[in-house]
Every structure is written in C-alpha cells, then in structure tokens.
Image 1 (cartoon, one colour):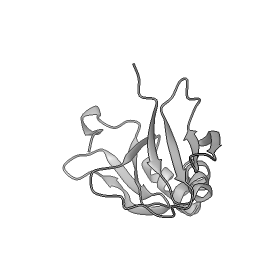
Image 2 (image 1 turned 180 degrees about the vertical axis):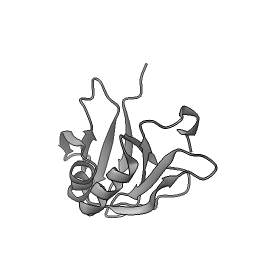
Image 3 (image 1 turned 30 degrees about the vertical axis):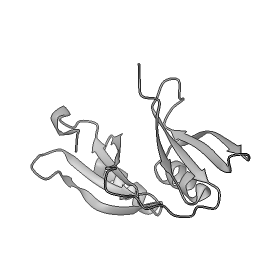
Length: 135
C-alpha cells in the first residue's frame, strides 16, 4: 500500500494551478472536467503519480471560497535549502507566512507559505532530523 494523493478544495482552479506549478514548481499531471457533477479535478506533483504522492485540486463549479476549519494542518514539501526556497517563492509572488528559521523547540529549519485558498504549505529541509519532520 502507499498514499496516492491528498485532496483539497479550491475556489479558483486556474489561480491554484498557477500557484502549485509556477510558485512551488510542481507539474500539472492531469485535469478532467465532470460536467454532470459540476466539478473539475486537477492533479499536481513533482513526479508522475505512479511513483509519487500528489495533490488533487478539486474545484466545485460556482464555489469560490471554503471555510478551512481547524482540523487540517498543512502540506509539507522537502526542499534542499529552505532559505533559498523562500526567496524563490517570494520572487514568484508567493505569500510567506513564516520566514525560514529553526522550528520552535528544535533545530530543523522550516518556513510556511500560504496557497491562494489559505492552505499552509511547510517547507522543510531535506537534511532535517527525522524526529523533527512532524508537526
């Protein structure tokens, strides 16, 4: 068994695809409209679905906004250098909500960005202590 994807609902599919592909550097892997159900699914990721876990962006036609609630935490992305990733994302127009620096109560360097719908994305160093990878 393996994790295939995580799904998040988005209010503007084009804006979200732009963020995940142009700002975070993922690829749009596939996209399909479901006219009878009035929704569109777009899958984005850093590699093909057969080898990687991806994100499913679900756009329900006519729904422009969702209440995020307080149960969902964040998506985590491993990067080579958190400081450099933050600068690249900032230059691409990304919203940095926590600057790069050591995590509270630890030494692993992390940062957080926010996608257009308000979902948090954690940037985590590839060299992070495995014990610091949750949270």
